[in-house]
Every structure is written in structure tokens, then in C-alpha cells.
Image 1 (cartoon, rainbow, N blue to C red):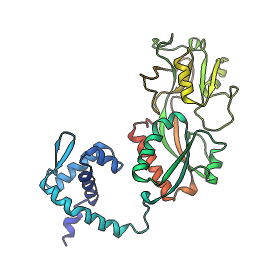
Image 2 (image 1 turned 90 degrees about the vertical axis):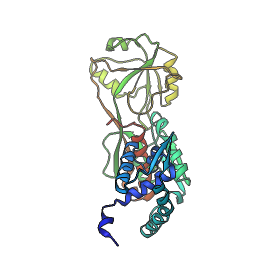
Image 3 (image 1 turned 120 degrees about the vertical axis):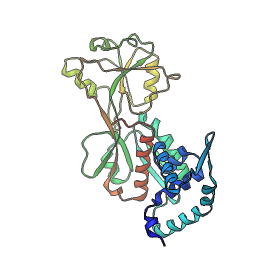
Image 4 (image 1 turned 180 degrees about the vertical axis):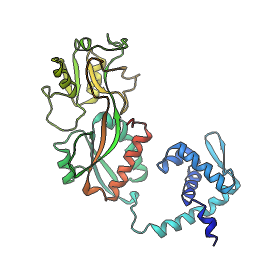
Length: 318
């Protein structure tokens, strides 16, 4: 056996070649392997260099294998199956898992992520049932007891029992309908925005908030001896958005993470905070899980899947 020659070949490239043969698409092969499309394009170029063959030509949106690639395709699956059988004794197979995974996540972020995550589970782990909610009595307590498997929340101090992984970050902004009296102003002024009522939509997922609960925005106003009028306090994202587009209310929300409501359905304008109001430039979201689940195969797989989806969807500006 020519071990020296084999040592120069990255066997991971053969896995990528198999994905390309099955999908006949660089983009879909990248999604199968949880890498970006540019990264898969670089892998394909490395394969061409190492095998000294173009391997694929493009016809429309489809990759057409070369004769050498077709020849490899007849032997590659059995070879990879043999390697997998040799090393996979006791390895986790998401397709074989059956059970419920409970996640608490703010609605504005769930809109972007949960449908994509469900689609991925249907493809690769169909036995998993997602249980999704937007509120909990205690994030740390429910993670510790197993009532929750994961939580997505605003980054803040957590106990040593909780692992926090950065997911996304966004800057606060002022939302309003597109024909609002302030919509055409390039720069907002604090005195002007305080003339209008506000919708207070809660990003936090703990219970027990009401109109008397001050947000970060309220606390900064209090430091200046000011306050705002709250017309609506809600946890329901689309209730807040419907009210926003049908009134002169304003709303404080994140400018960058999650998906802004589609402009043809909800014509929303986002404005930077007034310069005369101190504020935090970046607010981060984190994925939380209890340390007891860190070595659980399904939890590791799902954690990687969530992080991959957030990155793929360009929700991570941190």
C-alpha cells in the first residue's frame, strides 16, 4: 500500500465528492455538510487539483460529472460505508433518535429560525418533535430540571451551570410605519419621538412583566428626567407590528438580528436612536443550555444545527 501517496490525500475531500455526486449542486452539497457555499467551491477546486480532473461541468444549475467522476461514483459509496462502519460503533445517528426537544425563544427571533430548524429536522432527524414557547418562569431552573433543553435569550450574567453560546447581535432602533410623520427625517431627536405613544414589545422571555416594568429604554429616559407614554405593552410580536402600521405609535426593537417583517406586508421604517439619548450600541442573543446536556449527542447535534442555521441565514452580526 502506498501510504506516502495516501497521506497527501485529505479523506474528507472524498466525503465532499460524494455529497457533490448526490446533490449535483455546490449549494446543496454545502448545506448537507454544514459549510458555506464558498467553502464548498474551494473544496471542489482542491478535489480537481488532487485528482487532476475537472470532475464536474455545469449545465444550467446542475453539475454534470466527468467520466472520471462517474467511475469514482461506482466505488466511492461502498468505500465510505466501509470506513463509516469501522469508526461509527456507538456513534450518534440523528435519524434514529425519537423524542421531544423543548426550546424557549423570543417570537421575533423564532420567526427567522424555527421554520428552518423544523425543515432540517424533517430531513435529518424526523423523530424529533420541537416544543417551542416564548415564556418561562425561570430559564435556569427549567434548564436544570429538564423542562427546557435550550433557551435563546438576551446575553446577561448566568450561573456556572449554564453554557452560553453567542448567536447573533443587533443594535437598537426606533420602528415606525413608513408614512409616519417622522419617517422622512434623517436624524431623530428625543423631544420629537417623546411626542408620540410607544408600543412596548418585550424581548425577554421571563414572565411577570407589565406596563410598570421598565425596559432599558425607560431606564435611560429616567436618567434624563424624562418618560414616555406607553400605548400598548405586549409579548406578541405580530400584535405589536399590526398596531405599529395602523397607528402613529413608535416601537423600540432590534435593527439587525432576526428578519424584519416583509415590507410589502408590513411597511416598516427603522431609524437610529436619537443622538441625545444614551444607549447600548449592541445587544447580543445567546443560546443557553445546562451543563448536564453538554455531552448528550442529540443536544450537541441540535446546538450545532441552530448555530449553523443562524450563520447561514446571516443573522449573526456580532
